[in-house]
Length: 186
Image 1: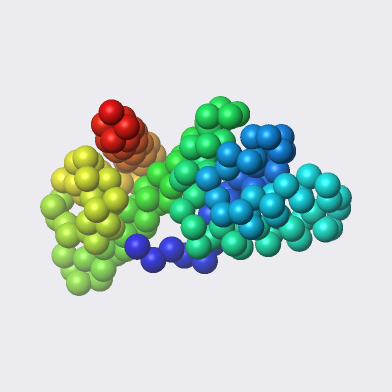
Image 2: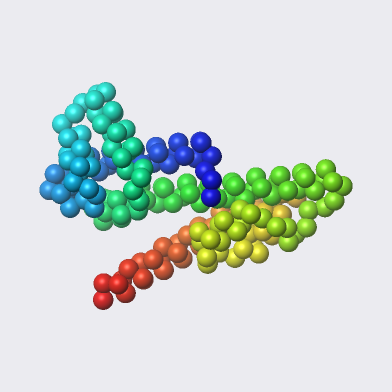
């Protein structure tokens, strides 16, 4: 799935927030951080810095972390400080998926009208296929239908329903991931 530049910037900002939260942890806790030794040492250095130097260091660490999966860090922080940061990240991801689906449905309806046709309720959506790959438990026909209904009516009710459906699928995937992780440790 290709991300827009603004979505990439939002995700980088989220990663920066994660680094700031990690830098606020005590050195004893940071020693257990699931990252490379280099990144761990850089995060430890942040606590001693002030002003612009601190900001530069945080941006540098963020740059290093972009190439690594951030989920273990969010999980680590959630165990230590609660899961507010992780929930915010997941909320924004679900919003992003919903917005992509709505934009595609509106665009499909516009193209259909230009060709003097009506958009079918069972229209083909590449975004729904992408979402299904990411969240296999989602009801792809229901998503397509809700995208169609939104494009036809522009009712916020349908937008909220798409969000709820995606949120439920995200929670189901998270639960499945935790179950699988639990089986691996048994």
